Length: 402
Image 1: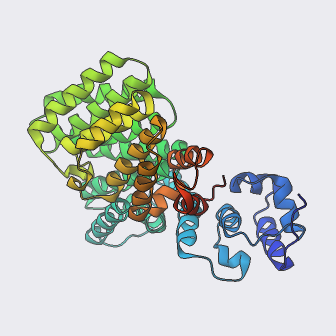
Image 2: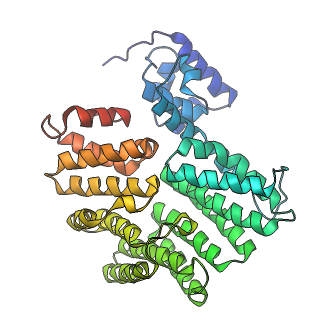
Image 3: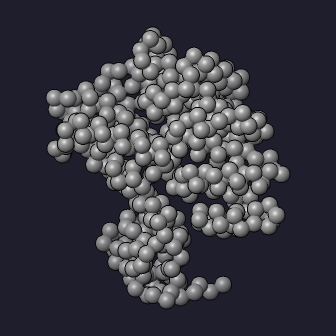
């Protein structure tokens, strides 16, 4: 089918000008946006319409501007938030490169008390899956904390930097950038090592293992987490140590399953279950370790590398509301939906859970590769009776087509 010419040729011109200002080729810019270079070229020349808000959001994110700046008109709020989160990735990456603790900071930051409040806000934004808000806050916060590590309140600044870098890694991982998430985890480790706190070192090891796992490096994740568990054994009397040990056991369980070491995975899970019975539900370091989070991990492990029927069985017993963090709850709903979709015959329930996840955390769902794959699976076998307009509406909001 011949592409429809754009009704507004100035859109293509605005795109071309922004691309040239950055010195990028069409092929490079198109690769950043996830569109073909031929499509990008046709849009720039006004030979293909660029009024699809999803295409505009992708191109705006690639050019690090808002869709409004390209279209010259309003864009729906949900799309603006997702585009803003993705557009902020470059700034976070640059900040992570800049905050090398072997080099002096380049800024003069606000007092550490204000930075502590900003780190707390960052955690709240991530718990609520406000990725755009977190992306706006992170670059300046990371640089300010880095500068303060050379000041009189160095120890506190290092702890706060460890937390901020951990959250940067989490954000990058959840937005589908695991290599950059590894860089964030390394900065978290550097700050933890400089602080000399064994619990913070375990916290950083969790971040690194999770980033490695997201890159598909299950053996590396297992090595990091196992070593951290061993290092933490002599510090279990410290506040937060038991919770961090339990969380590391869960990483080991997942990484072992990724290595097809089923018995090892079950052993790590059993140890995490035992620790969770001792600790109960906790909020230590924002990890939310406890019986509920163990169940969420078990669901994820089973749906990814095990038995989706078992994942659904665990989900039936779990209560995600026991964890007051949207970021944790959204994994329950999306992972259970993925398991139901894999089993077949439960498409209505899978769609309902995905819609619940979207209401809870639209930015997460709209940028999740796992959620996208599940919606595509449901679309391929959908009928009006199995999903109808609700499924098609979700697919449109996620920029998917049947």
